[in-house]
Length: 80
Image (cartoon, rainbow, N blue to C red; front, side, top):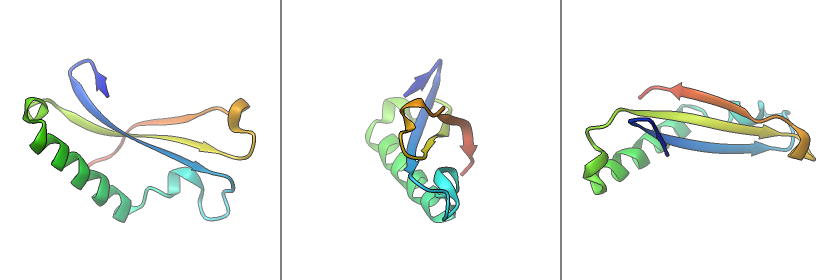
């Protein structure tokens, strides 16, 4: 996604229960490395975006019947 001149890689996570830490907690260091690797591959293949600033956002949803639940949108959720 683009936010002004920034390329944004968005990870969307859903968890029914928070018993294992919830949706946001599921973006651990291993997952962050995988997302960074995927972003790097994208930027290599789509070199027109390689000079733009980038960031990683996370959109998290939790619970059953989440249609009425608010989304959590964490901009610049992690650095790599």
